[in-house]
Amino acid sequence: MNRRSLFRHLPAAALLGAGLRPATAHANSQGVAANEIHIGALGPLTGATAFIGGPGRDGLTVAIEQINAAGGVGGRMLRMTYEHAFTPAESVAAAKKLVEQDRVFALILASGSTGAAAAADYVRETGVPTYNIFGATTVIREPFARNVFHSAIPDADTSGQAMIRQARTFLPNQARIGILAGSYAFPQANLRAIEPRLREQGIEPMVQQFEQNARDFTGQLIAFARARVQLILVLGSFTEAGFAIRQAPEKGLTNARWVLDGSATNDGIVPLLGNADIRTIQGYANVPFFAGQPDPTPQRFRQLWIARHGQPPQGRPNLYDIVGYGSAYVLALAIQAAGTNLTWDGLCAAWSRLQDARPSRLGGLDVIFPESFSPGDHQGNKRLGVAVIRDGIWQVVG
Image (cartoon, rainbow, N blue to C red; front, side, top):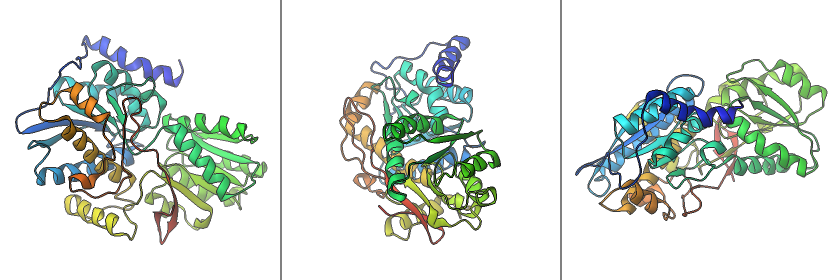
C-alpha cells in the first residue's frame, strides 16, 4: 500500500476498530453555548515536526486571548482545547477525541501534511468545520469537501510552481537542477508538483531523497557534486536544509545555490549554517513578514508573543506562530459571518463566502496575507513572497 493509500484508509479503519460512527453535519451546533464557542486543535508538540505544532498552538493562543479581550465573537468567548498528535494514528485519535468526546464546534489541523492527511477521511465523514492551516498535501484537499478550509499555506502545486519560478530567477538559464527531498508527506507533495513541471520546461531534475530528521547528507551531496549541479531545491525542514547546506562544501559542492521550501525558511536554520554563504540561499514565504523583521507590524506581534509566552528560544516566534495567529482571526471572522444561530452547515456556508479576511477586521495585526474563499475554492491564500537572510534573520523582500 502506498503512502497516500495508507493515509486514506487509516482513519476509516480507526473508526471501525473503535466501533464508533461519525457524527453528521446536519444542524450540528455542539460546542456552542450562550457565552462560549469551543474550538479544537491538534498538532505535534514533540517529535521531528514539533517546530510546526508547538508554534501553531502558541500563535493560536495569542490570537484567541486577544479576540476574547476585545469581547469575543458575537458576545461569545472562544475556548481552545489543543491535543498533541505527531504520528498518523495520533492525529486520527486526537481528531476523534476533540469531535466526539470534547464535542468541539470547529477543528483546526495544526499538524502539517502528515497529520492532515491522516485525519482527512475522518473530518470529511463527520462534516465538522475544519481549518487545515499547515498541510500542503493533496490528501486533505482532494476530493473537495465543503467543510474543509485551508489557510496561509497553499497547495503543493502553487508552492511548487513558485519554487521553480524562484529558481529560474535566482540562476537564469540553468539546465541542471537538483532536488533534495524528504521521504515524508510535505516534501513528497512538493516533489510530485515540481518534477513534471521541470520536465515540461525541458529540464530533467536530479532527485536525491532522505529520511525524515536526517543529519548526514554525504551521499546525496557527492552525487550532486559529481553531476555538477549548481542549483538545488530543498524540500524538507530547516534542520535538514541547514545540515545539508553546511556539509555541501566539504563534499565538493562549493558553488551551489539553494532554494528552500516553506518549512525550511525558518530562523532556526541560521545557527546551523555555520560559515555558509547566505547570499546563495533563498526561500519562499507564505506570509508578508517574518516575526523578526524590523517592521512595525511583526515587531508588535513579537511583543504580544513575548507578553504571553515569555522570552522565546532561538528561531521563535516563527512562521507557524504567525500563521496560527492569523488563522485564529480568520476562523473568528467566519464565525462572526455565520451569525448568532451557529451550526456546522451555517458556518461552512458563511466561510465559503468570506472575502478579504484579515486580523485587523477584529482588531488584530495583519501578519498574514488577506484570505478569501468561494463555494468551489477553499484555499484562502495563494500569494507567496521571496525571502532572504539579512542581519541573521529571514526577511520577506518581494
